[in-house]
Image 1 (cartoon, rainbow, N blue to C red):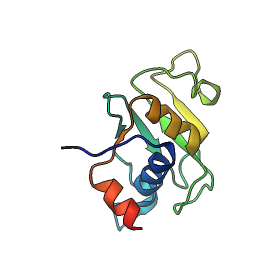
Image 2: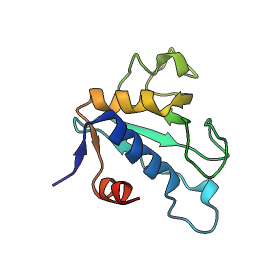
Image 3: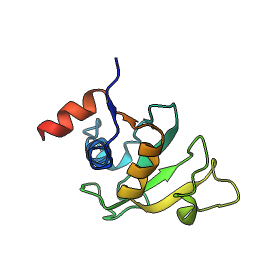
Length: 123
């Protein structure tokens, strides 16, 4: 059974953990993280590193603003950050505040955290 996080502050913790935990020891900046999934099936790629549109633009967090891309459905909260507003599901959204992304996932019934939630709460 998947763990679903619905509280905006806890979703932010899960996203921070997702972004700051890299599986590749060789070059953490080149690791592309898997898309995040909402409880209702909504997905989006959330990335942050020295190669992404984020603050700080480094390979270490915590991050205040991150890059989200290729959501499977348009969302009005993300629109101001769209690189190509005319194509909302096939674009990148740069420097999006993590709180906005947490609100987006909260509006989709929460984020699927699985093992990330337990690790984030322990940290």
